[in-house]
Length: 533
Image 1 (spheres, helix red, strand yellow):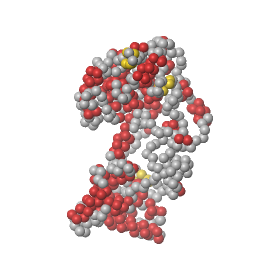
Image 2: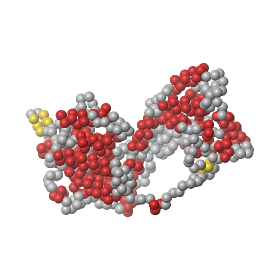
Image 3: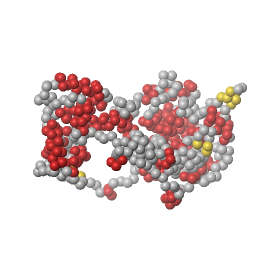
Image 4: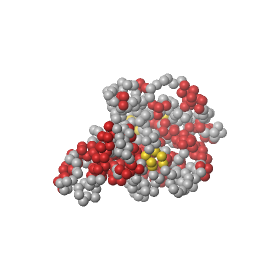
């Protein structure tokens, strides 16, 4: 609310207008007259006897337009009908264009700013008249993406050294058609009995764990980088961003392999990788005449088991507000689950898969899958302890080692390998629930629902966002002149909140009359696992 008043009053401050005395310079007089006209219109009813003022009625009407995705032409027709239905002295505007113009005149609009598609600059201020980017020479274009990690840190998320934590010691292997990251035995203790097992690659694991690179080591590596310009331009080393949702990616790979759908890692190519690495002989491709066939593996459902699992998912009833109706994601033949969102993967990984696969897989495979799901449940819990995360670090490494005995190398892409780094990130960054992308994804879904014209999605989102904000304002109270004279912001939504004084230089918060803030030493810095999710 303070920002709204600050924006509206900006021109008055720039020109030295004083509302208390009514004095101003020549230009400020014009601005003051326009604003006084708006104040007068704000106090004018839509028509005699109406409970709404003109601006308040338009704000609510624009909100309805956005929520129901009305077109501009249909909105114009509605305004024409309202003009005829209301008394002749009504203040209903003639068109949608005039409505937006009036709302923008009180600071309730938006400004479109073009940006270079490589994120080099904004075409505003001194660059407003340019048609090409002064940095990369690309023409104007509106880009909706953000910078990728490789564009910021020059560390690619693909290839032999995709893991930034392992750095030069990344355990990578070039399979038939992708990079895989196997050999997690090296992270175990030197005396761990699993290191001596030859079931992995027919030899003992003697390699040490990846080195811990200090800050000085990282700085030394950065000093060798060439000077480059920021942005996503190909010549600068930039690339398209890839959102890192570990749980969703692992669940897609795990569930796809169980159901043998298009996300499965059990293909003829992955079976050939087993032959090349000379591991898991019983799962190699078998030749039958002129054709090859894949023998059934223990990490995939049989046809009957797949139908039982899908039927289990279809019969699940979730609590209100906990998740969407996941039963609708199962196809008609009970053979596949499609159209899953991030929240669906979250529920499947932590709640449903550990129960649904029971009795449908052998005991070893089932146990390791449940251990993996338990790790995610612990990692995403609402309370954490540092010692628990240190133990989870050892647990996830052991889980990945045991899964290497079951799943083909193609299952272990970079996202699966990075699970071993998640406990360290939780120790440094804190709770995952305050750092994950779920909140932003839900809000992005809300913004996408504003889109009516798919050729201009940015404009639809901007109009919808502004219209919703306008509908939540108590415009009659905000626009009263006495609010500007006293300098206080009054709102129906902040009755018991400390008032904010609008000052030219800064906003000064007036402390509340009662209450106190606990000392920092009173705050508990450790996390507790009790009542964990």
